Length: 152
Image 1 (cartoon, rainbow, N blue to C red):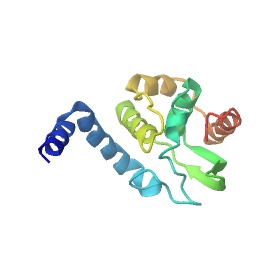
Image 2: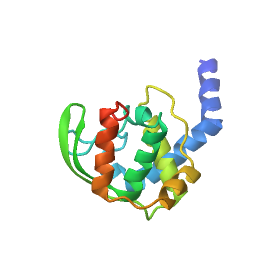
Image 3: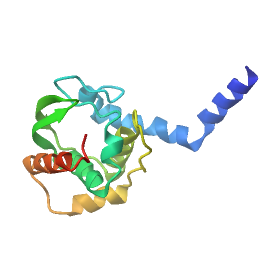
């Protein structure tokens, strides 16, 4: 029992635990209303992020795509868990690069099967500095990445 208590205290005091507690605040304030508290989405309405975004975040193209979705939004039909979804993801370019990096790190680690490296504000800034994409173009990029097996 004492070992379990010591392990729990050590985990709570670790830097990783502090970071994990900070990230959900940015997610809760901007994403939770659609994608839900554990990034599980709403079947048929809002896509599940948990357990899927780690694969996308494993490639540079996937990372740029995820950043573009948050900056520019996305429209068009998508397939998630074998079911079609049609709708729009609103852009969140109004958020600071650090907030977007925190959100992306959270969604790429929620329910992850593989460890994704954290997103950085510099990565977000680089995509922000590139020419702006229309939300439909972001959707087309998703289709290309899905065909390549990068987006599940």
